[in-house]
Image (cartoon, rainbow, N blue to C red; front, top):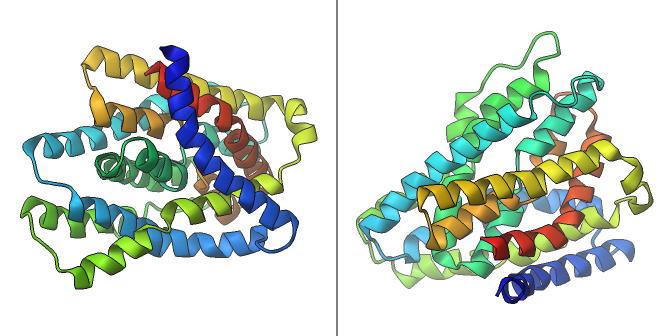
Length: 309
């Protein structure tokens, strides 16, 4: 049964990674380069992913179970990041501060938006996207508070916490817009639904094509010489999902919510690792390499973790 589950989950992961392979080929042939992919990231972040979140709120049938699941997902997401922050605290303290912060950030924060949403959509469906949007809220809250502190704690003139960025960002705003529609069971006209669904349909393909451009630039020959990156991969791809599975079993959470939370915990390091490292003058090159390597290794770990659950 375990291997059957591995192959079932693996099918969905492989479908997404086939799209990523097309992105790799496009990058290698110069059709869709990493620099182009980075520009398209803004389109994905500010337009397409919010449309995907809105679609889940606009199309999911209202129920008290879904509301409870939504708040549980936010709470579990906050707890997941808190546990990760405490668990990773003793490590990498002997590395240079500009590198230590990158390792810790990459270990803590998963790609629950770009990687999590497409995978949840493929494995669970729109109910999973609904719950994943709640995990994204927790990600935004923690990354723009603890994440900013982590990236700047060793520097003079630390950056202040920006509450506006926590609330007014593309991961949180669609929830504020979609939640009243969901709660009131508003039947929106095709004039609104058709554009939202059409734009949302680009989420998985574009996310995977962009992901492919990052894989294309990875120096795989140096993977096994970077033991710190491999340790981060072990923490992010093995320890965190196993801890989540244990927590889900102990709490009795199951079904779509459990699968969504597990996938969110098992996703590779967030692209924000690179963006925050560059923004706050840490080692952005190391961040890019870490995200690429850990994302590549997740091809193996994601189906296994989903099957274990």
